[in-house]
Image 1 (cartoon, rainbow, N blue to C red):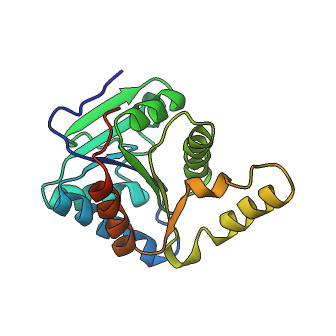
Image 2 (cartoon, rainbow, N blue to C red; image 1 turned 90 degrees about the vertical axis):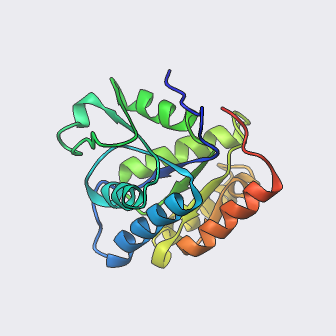
Image 3 (spheres, rainbow, N blue to C red; image 1 turned 180 degrees about the horizontal axis):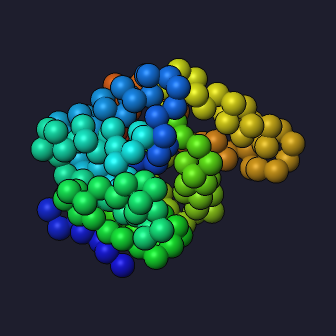
Length: 196
């Protein structure tokens, strides 16, 4: 299983849409995040696509010389326009393997706006965290309230007895890329990122 942390201080896994969405602020947030990653010398770990918000964050990271680690399953190479010019480009056989490689090569995760695939990624890492399988921080980037309905549903799950009362404690909600950068900086100041 690839795990290339040799010279990397911190890696952020970005889960986000392979589409742009209708709100221009989503694309701007993805670009801003890429700039933050490069400026702080944090490595981008993401789904290796060159389309939608995925492509925006990767190109912005690369434009400022940031390191990128992309993981894509073979069957999505055409659909998501696999981005071959990344620092590290990994092709997997399955979606499950893709998520595993991304997770293993990251210290923390952030979820930008996205669709069903992004929700799948979000719920998997949050469930793993809730079950005690990892302790990596998870940030939900709630641009223009995009994730408000999701947060309401999580509250509903708890209220209706389908999740423990502390389920949402594993999720840090931030509304801007600036707030995310500060949260990550605070996290790194408190503790050295654990090797994975």
